[in-house]
Length: 613
Image (cartoon, rainbow, N blue to C red; front, side, top):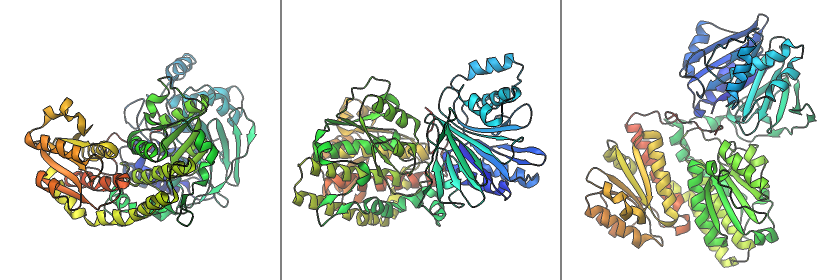
């Protein structure tokens, strides 16, 4: 959630740091700051609120230096304030730090340091770290050793970056556990550092990634990496194919709207190179799956959080239908705490847009310890969830900046379909003719999504009718039940309207008591195997005065006669329908939030990448 940027080289670090932090604003934050090293030592600026406040402070009171670090903070310990903002500086004025994570043994360490005479300047747990480093410096240790010893005392997961005025051409970075990523960018006579790729993508495409329990010392001419015990290790430098322009709004009013419209391309990209129509098969080489291994799978556990978990619920239907493998979906934050039954014939499949979601990484680690095969579906190449998996599927969606996920929801729906087809093929359950039908259907999806986007004005009309509501219900069945959950989540995330989702068959078991003339009910009811059941629920809701907004298949006169308003989708095979039904619900949430004047790309209290539990 917190954003980190660093630079060491020959240029003034300040504009590089502020530009990098601007590209990380999507992560969510409540304060910001930067620190640079120059001939006078550490020069520091911090401010509360949006990054523009920090930029204005720097314009009024400039700072210059060829080495620096920056940070956007999302409060955990201590309220948003200037003194709680990062970077934090030690008593000597020589050591400065930015930090992503939570020091779980914070109170114990703080009591120790206070007993040694340390006076704290903030309410944060992060300040602990800089004082620990100074403790070891005071004992005569050099900077890297002192930092390593300090880091080894911390409990929890962390991304840590340190500077010392006594060693002014070095940045020390460390990663402990599954806290937010640490990305090293390689330039020509200069080096960059960030918690996420977009922050430094305009400066370099050559990047290396720290794994847990690793640290690196970064200089203008390169870097050296070790484990936390000091043993040298080698980090591969890879080329990231995204370009910096891909992270810009491209003329759209909001990133979210841009990313909704990018779904034509992102769905095409996630299929690119993976469909072999000649041989009627799916190609997922990074999954490292053989036919023998596919036949040996007894169960798949999909683990994920939020939107990714909703994608997983669709994936459960797809895998069980096409590959006949028992599949369950486990919320990642619950998985490792319930003593799950996992063995060597189980696959744990993690879905994460960032690949750095702390709960999801912890669930993967639990699966590993119990002997499962680990797979992941991720968007961020080089992310932790990709690296620790036995095999992975890249979403190939490009950067997603808006906090409310859109293209990183529909891309894994397609990836899960591809996976289900591959498993069904490898297990001998799908004939070449059946594979051909499914693959041809997949190739229609970009055109279907394009058609849905052309119908955006109709969605806006529905949004105008819903914008003043205070509560709403979303209902669906079967493969579109998760889309009800996802639609409700999108509405509440960015418009702050209370929205609940239920399997439609559960309406009679309680939720129907809420129905009245003021309660919009969004019913996802395409022509699928659950269609007649959905009609029954719609009729019951209408009989009690509910306002029906239906998502329905083109030409459905029965739905048209029952619903107050309809969001139409093209006809397509029911296994593919979740991709289509979700698009108008994304647009509906967006339009309602826009009409209400909300901060769509950075909704309150939310962050793009949840890197602490």
